[in-house]
Structure formats: structure tokens, C-alpha cells
Image (cartoon, rainbow, N blue to C red; front, top):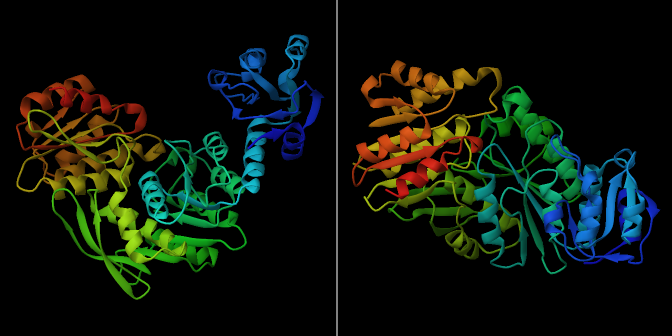
Length: 464
């Protein structure tokens, strides 16, 4: 959908410094490497770069309109930019303007918005929700990790008038972020998967996490619906505090959308989906009991969209997870590798260890664990508790790397794990030890926070 200069000014409440010959523009970009002909370039200023220094480069690359701040232009020579023929729109804050443009664009479209947040399971729930809604609708959705104050607008700019639903993943690391994201997308359906120990450096404690996630409920459209996990007592408390009556999903018998008779056949989880007095069989191609919970959240959205239970089941069967999120792989030596390297916090670590225990059967289980980051002052304690959980999950071997590796080791020893079963070292050493000490049929879980890059261990094991 084209953008007129007057649209930009109206959306951002900006001012026109000068106008080029083109009054209609195409796509919006924040990166000079992705500039398209006749596009709009929004100059963002971050902690390590200031895009105002690249305005002329953007214009030379094909941008016909530049959005910059008044302060960012101080001291810059505007003559070359004006000679380039580009239009220059000035605003107070380009990050805020990016969100305003996304909000303006969303209003031009007719899609109903589903916004998903939570400490764990956001991406898988988003993927499953997309698969379910596609059983009866044209769906637009977040790609990758485009879920922050830059990523969300860039996601929304891909929306056209052809889609009837937009499924958005909202991430955050500090108070107020979900409020700002919610103000941009004003969801018709809000989903919160769970409240757990994540981003504690910015949020302080679990109460802070709950308050931050709960910001989403205050941004709903006037006809908005809320979908919450009935198995999370913190979400039950949040619903009471907010005075809302959500649609509850979960394994609880009291949930509106629930599952029973859950089993795993080595490739699929089978369960009976129960809702609205009806039930149907589901075959879910994802391992881990918590994945059933994610599927129930997606099913609840599908029911809210008016889809029959049988169509929802078909959608769940086609849904999947993305790389690094509990994907099961096998190398040529017959080693089963659970790649859950995308990110980690105490709640997801515990769930991954439980999944490893479920999947290994009678075979040996191994965990290769990296640091859980952004846990604040209690990080050492959380890593000790992780070691205890690992030891109690019946591991044959525990391999640990990172600055908190000794804390994990300490916890595992306290829980009774033998010192000879624990190894600490760098990622290369871990991978080499696992490759030489494991055998065909063994199961190994590899997990850690994103910046720890535990996928390097997975790559080494797959190349064995």
C-alpha cells in the first residue's frame, strides 16, 4: 500500500523540512542495506549507531523520503540531501514515529490482531496459532524475532488488505515495552502463555514480570478478548487483579479449552481436545508436554475466530516450531539431539529437562547447558537450582559451560549427582567430550541463552 507524504505527516505529526518531486512512496526501511526504489527511510538512533549519518546514503540508494529528528539534523549539511531529490520529514523521536507509522498502516487494513506474549512459548504459540487460523483465513504473522519496538512495526508494514488476521508476537525486557507495543497494534485477542523468571535484570522479580506482561490487557481494542493459561497461578492472580474474565486454556479440568489422554508415539503427541462441550482427537508433531499447552492456546484463538474443532485439529497437525526451539535431530552416529538453543530461563530449562526425561525412554540422557542470562542479582541461585533440577531428572551426564557453570555444578552435587558425571568447560570442550563419551541411542539436550550460542555445540555434534 503506497504512502503519500501527507500520510507520513499525519501519522507522525511531523513537519516538512523540504519536499522532493515524489509525493507518493513505497516501502519503509530502517536499514540502508534494504532500501528499495522510492522507499521511506526512518533514521533510528541506537546505543551503537546513529542512522542520521547515513541519510544521504539512503537517498542515493533509492529512498525518496527520509524521516529524521530535529536534534539529529543539527550540525548536518542538508544541501546534499536536498539536492538528492528526497523529501525530508522531521519528528521529535524516530522510534516513536516508526510505531506511529505502523499504527496508521494497521488502521488502513482490516485484519483482526492476535497479540501473544509470555515468558515462554511465544514463538511456538504464534506459529501454531497461524497454522490454525489458516484453516479458514488469510493470515499475516510475525517472522523470526521481529517482536520489539523496531521489529513489530517492520512486521506490520508487510500487512496488506488481503489478510483477515494478523498474529503478532510481543517481546520485552523492561517495564512499559508491552504497553508501547500494545498501543501500536491494539489487539482484538490477547494471549499470555505464562509468567516466569525472565528478564529479571530489567523487571526485578516475578511480580514485575507479571505486571509487565499484564500491560497487554490494558491495550485491547474495545471488543477485545483475553486468553490465559489456566495452569499458571500467577496468571490467575493477574486476572483477578485486572478484573477480567478470560478464556482459560490448559490441562486443568476447569479450563475452557483443555486436553486429556496425552501420549507420545515417538513422532507425535496425541491428545483429546475438549472445548464448548465438544471434543476431537489431535495429533501434534511437537515433543514436550508444555507444547500441548501452546497448542491449546492456539486452539482457543481458533475457537474465538469461529473455526470448527475439527479444522483446529487439522491446523495443529500442520503446525511446527522454529529452529532452535525444541527441535529433535539425529546425527550419523545415532545420537538424538534436542536443539533448544534459541533461549533459556529457569522455567524453560525445567520444561526442557522434563521433555528430555519423557523422550529418552530406556536410553541414557545427557544435558549440555549454557548460562541463563538477564536474571539479575539472583542469577547464581537460579543456576544452582538448575543444577539441582538437572541432577533430579536422572541424567547420565551433565555438561556445563559459561560464567555460572560452577553454580550449576554446585547445585547438581548438592542434589546427589556424582562428580564424575559432571563436566565444565568451554563449548568446544563440551562438544568434544559429548561426541567421544556418548553412543548410539543416547539423548542429549542442548540449551542456553541466545547470546551463549549453544547452537555451536549442536553443529559440532551433527557433524560427528
